[in-house]
Length: 217
Image (tube, rainbow, N blue to C red; front, top):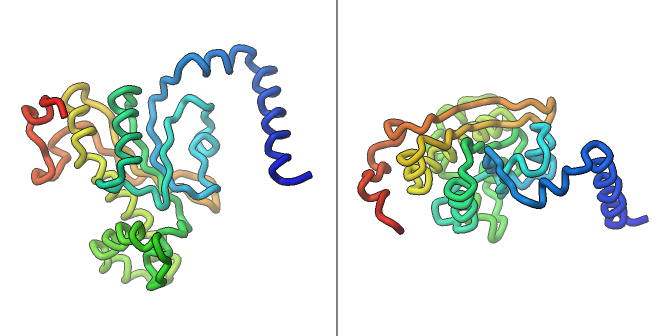
């Protein structure tokens, strides 16, 4: 049996198990989704939002990319963000990185990797900002893991610079922003930062006026 065929068999087993535990599970799931959380995570196959938080399908709205980036020109990310914040009305946004991230490790190197260079440049900019404390660490692993943490913190900052988040903060005092790092070696989450829905948390140069945010765009 091929690995592909095995996926389909496992799907049938999973569906059957869900039915046995809760006969109405899929009926409820098919009608609507009302997640309280948006997850912005890494594409790494070992970091599954539902798996590591013990949640069911429908509880977390998920966007994933290499190294859990919030890039202000990424229309995919921004579309997910707008839908989650303005339509689903999520109460929390979680940016979750992970120790041992290959994208972050590559950003610390001088390798030419083709198209991905353009994406990794965003992580290199984070490294440039925090170069001194990162370079002061003794090993390559320590440096990479510290950059993972700084990267998560900076992506949380990138979120609150968007008009999407700022408008929601003005209108409904949500969502709250959280920065996490997941440990592959122990399965535990390290909470790095929480940013409350308070405009004073935004650097003034990135803060839009309430009058401007009320104007339809």
